[in-house]
Length: 222
Image (cartoon, rainbow, N blue to C red; front, side):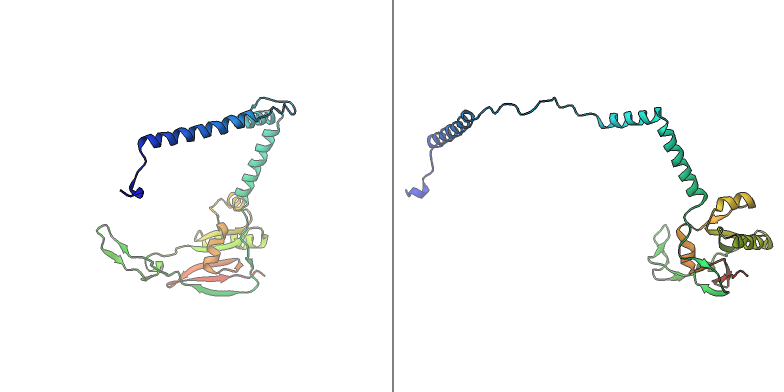
């Protein structure tokens, strides 16, 4: 039998484990024996971590007792009301200086097939569709800046002249004030989504359907 084929017996394994354990014990005892008491440097305090929620609650109660919390709530309420009454104006929109007329094609390309409940394709992907083929824009859209008194007067005259066929849409100023004054619904173009889609660069501007396109007239004020 070759030496490379010999395997250690169970007795040899047990002997090695005992030697390893003895070596570990010696290391531990040596480290313990060599340890030195360095004393205490500075005062020692018990660890007392304050609950975060309890701390916040205590601060709020203190502000409430001092009236500061009520003042903060009132300020927050005023800011919220101001944001509702007068939202941020749409940027990049000027005042119409000259008459300009152009057209907007509302057609869209269907990005994916539209199917019915049975999976049959009703409209194939890539089909170009114009919503004005199936619906009609029965009201004119009037975009204007409510911060400009002249535009407000012009808008009111157009609304009265069209007898309810004009939908007023504000790009700046307080639409709520106009609603209370005019006793009718006034809309606000949030973040300028509509004016950018229609390519409106100046107001007042009147949008209405002409055939299968939308006509946009920018109206200069004299």
